[in-house]
Image 1 (tube, rainbow, N blue to C red):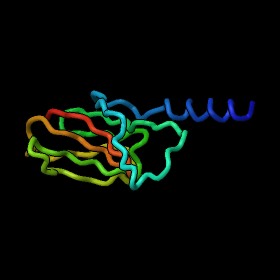
Image 2 (image 1 turned 90 degrees about the horizontal axis):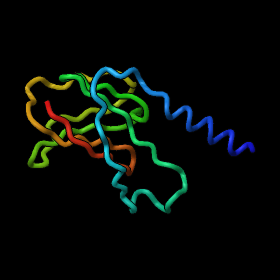
Image 3 (image 1 turned 135 degrees about the vertical axis):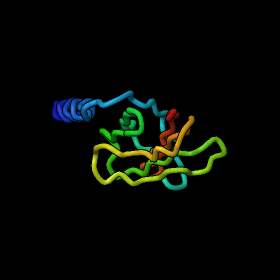
Length: 116
């Protein structure tokens, strides 16, 4: 019973998210580096929550302690930042087009696409 209650509270906490200020970015399940990750665990993997509204990227649940990178079509990193606090990040207005967005948390890399 205690395990069920803890799991229920954990699930409720992960459903709560920062106030949506734009369109949520769909991120893939993580790409995991087995050399860094070690043995497989049974813990669920929670996908970070990000929103994009124009050039404002809002970092929500699961983004603390992650690195966010934007890559151009050639795979070059054109923007990178480390998330110390949840909130808004202003992207450079000099960027235009479609970019791959990577959210890196330890050995896990979540990948999506954004258009600026």
